[in-house]
Length: 420
Image (cartoon, rainbow, N blue to C red; front, side):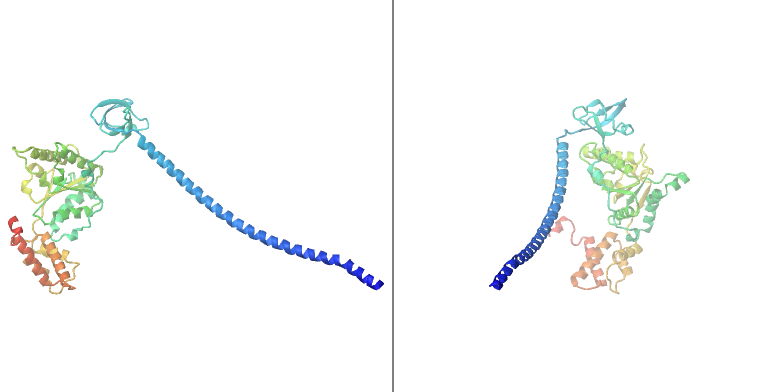
């Protein structure tokens, strides 16, 4: 009995210790589990925080861009709401004030913006004026006619002197007259002579006058202004003369400069006593051109090249020395010139061995450079249509026959023959 009682007491005494150890183990596992869950939540919250920070920075950048855009739009709105300025010209300077002529012709004595440099305020300068007080706000650049400002050739033509066959003597003359005076002005001063002001190119159509001017533009570093003489013939009185004046003013501003006037006979024809109002306006334009070529204002580094195929129509005052100092005649090419032109235009063409340019130059007696170019184009088209890899002598002969028929007027002899 005592043994049973002792065993029972011993078993009751040992149970609290076992329960305590079991509780400690379960609490440790629970704390580890909770810690791992907290770490996972912390990692997720850190990722969310980084993403939110990125979105915040993106939104801040977008907000700053929108603010800049709003400021720019506000500035545009303010500029659009600003009253317009009046354009005028300064007539005289009186102390701190200036006499200006507005666009409607009225003359005013007004004040000027103190921030404007006084050295720029000169008689004749274009200015912008306040609409209410007519005070001078700013200095404007000289305005040129769009036809004049558009005459400037920005991209130089890709034409070299080697592309002009049979014009060695003419190339030498125009280079001496134009390029030499622009590249070595000190040499002319040393010899005490004035360089030529202008060169007139004459000759039949298709001989290469315009192409020669393009080659000059390609080989010089000067600004090139090119236009046709008929563009200077305007409808209203004084407009043609004003355009000529602005053309030479722009050339002086951009000097060294070369002015090329093609078909100058459109405004340079002989002056007659009996003429219509249109002829008188053309004569006014011519007189302005004569004054610009040899007037009070020096051309300095401005050279003039003109071209025409009707030199007999030009006025004598235009042909005298001092205006066009050199007249270069470009005739129809001779036999050596025609052979050189064939070599120039057919140098990139695949040719058969039977092609002989010396024989072709004999056949094409009296042909111009443009007609020889048309022959080479026709030959290439025939070879392409036949599907052959090289141009043959027969192709050249057929093309010459075709051009010869057109030259003799067998196909197109007047407007009545055009439509049968």
